[in-house]
Image 1 (cartoon, rainbow, N blue to C red):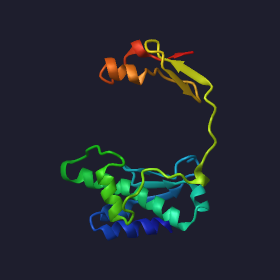
Image 2: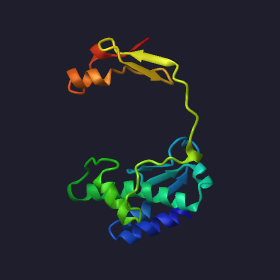
Image 3: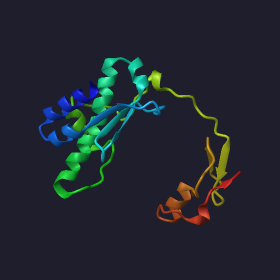
Image 4: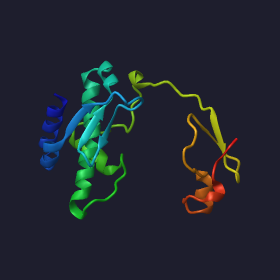
Amino acid sequence: MLENDARHLLRRLGDCDTLALRVEVHWNSRLRSTAGRAWQGRGRVELNPRLQLCGEEEISRTLRHELAHLVAHQRAARPAGRRRIDPHGREWRRACADLGIPGEARTHRLEALQSRRLARRHVYVCPVCGLEYPRARPLRRPLACGACCNRHARGRFDARFRLRPR
């Protein structure tokens, strides 16, 4: 049903027929705090099943929001090959308007999607500036202080600023 709706919306745009042929829409029960997500390479949209508690209007709006990501990516890649775009930038806003949701917000505050907050039991500290980074889960790979890396290493990872457990 939703896949047919998606195909219909994409065909109406006129420049997304190939995307309309390959688009897939699935419910993903692993989504916790997000209403949906789009996978550009696959032409796939995944929706949070808890959206069904919000009604048909919210499901339709979220489907269009995620389709706009696919449309924006396809349109940006067309003239000069693949190029990166801002996920909620002007290309996406234009695609939202074309799909019937002008002025769409980049996020939603839906009560049905509020997930429990994990306790931030792991605290990491920058050895240089002392900035603390509380985390719910322990770090699995080296991570450096963003503020120090931006200030002293042009935004690149620098082991001098590697976070240490407090």
